[in-house]
Length: 148
Image: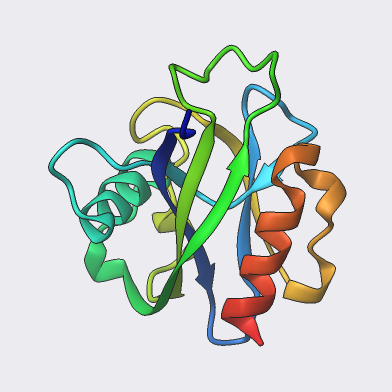
């Protein structure tokens, strides 16, 4: 039987100084990640990107510029994952976006709270250990692909 993967987008927001945005998850405070989310039925990946960035961190499309996108990133959920909803894992499209706003424009409680903090870091300082083990390889590969 063919595995079914949930389509998903993720955004690597980057300032002009090269630093990237990472966000601390509300449900797993030990985890830091990029804004991301599922692509709804009938929605393009770019539409999902715009919706997710507005919902998760309060940014409008005018506050960032899409520089690149790359798809083909896939990971499987662990067997005991409660949020599988019939999917074996996620198929992700990553976007590299230039941040055009101010830090004060980022709102972590704009919609449903998914993050409790954010920070800007040098890409080389991103640590795989901040992620759940099943996501590490994919995220690190996306960072390498889009930032090198």
